[in-house]
Length: 82
Image (cartoon, rainbow, N blue to C red; front, side, top):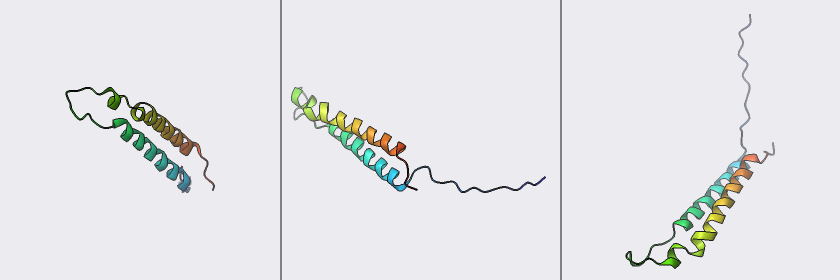
């Protein structure tokens, strides 16, 4: 019985381009979360509909978050060049 251990060199799961796209997608998601957090009212006792439900918070931020998630999916499924 030969008990040799063969060492196989494993290729990395993701390439440099994949990690670059993952960082870009993460930055887009973080930007969307930051925009969704928004600002605050000048007077905490007064409800300002325009600040809470602004176009940036309700429309732009969710689009950026979903776009960032799509970039992440692309980064995962992108084939390496090598």
